[in-house]
Image (cartoon, rainbow, N blue to C red; front, side):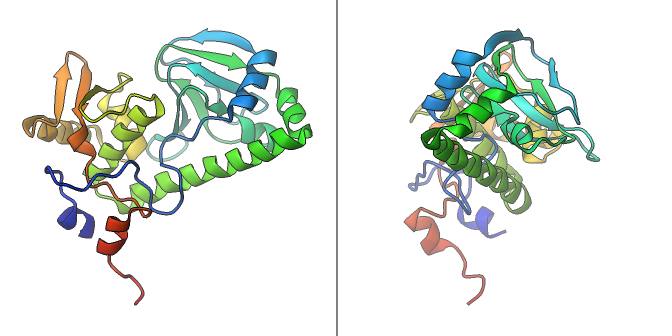
Length: 254
C-alpha cells in the first residue's frame, strides 16, 4: 500500500504530532470535556473506585453518566462477531453523555481496563449544563469532537496498515496522559495484546508480532509486563494537516 511504501517504520526525518485523516482530532481516545464542565460534574457527582475488569454499564442500559477521574475505561461492543473497543476513556472523558441526552439504549458495555476512579453523576446535571448558554456551546462542540474522533478511528482501522494503527494507538495513549516526549516513554497503562487488538482491529497474534518486530528494531523495550517505546516509533504518521504529508499523498480523483 502507498502508506507502507512511503512511510516505513525506520528512522527518518519527518515528524508529526498527530494521526489525522479527516478532522482535527485524533482517533481511539476522545478529547476530554472542557474544564468548566468537568468542574460542574465533579461538584455534583460522587467518586467511586472500580477495579480492572469491572462492568460499569451493561449493554442496552441507559441513563448512566460517568466522568473518568483516574485510570482507564472503555466502551466495549460485544454484539459484533468479534468484540470491539470503539473508544478508550482516559481521565477527563465523560461516559454516557450522548445516551443520557438521547434517552436511548445502545448495545455497548462500559468496562474498567485498569483500577480507576470514576465520578458517578446524576443525569439531570447534564441537563443543567445545557441550560447554561456558555456551557451548552462548549458541550455541543465537545460532542462534535467526540464523534469526529470516533470517525477517525473507524477510518484508521479501514484504511491504514496494521503497524501504523498500533503505532497511532500507542501515541494516543501517551498524548492523552501528557507523557509524550522525544525519548523513551513507558506506555501509561498495562494493556494485553488482545485488548490492544480490539481497539485497532487486529488479532492478538498480530499485535504480539508487531511488538516483537519493534523490539528487534530497538523501538520498544519490555520491562516485565510493561512496555517502553521510543519517540522514533511515531515518525512519519499520516496527518492531513501536515504540509509534507499532503505533498506526498496520492491524488485520488484527478
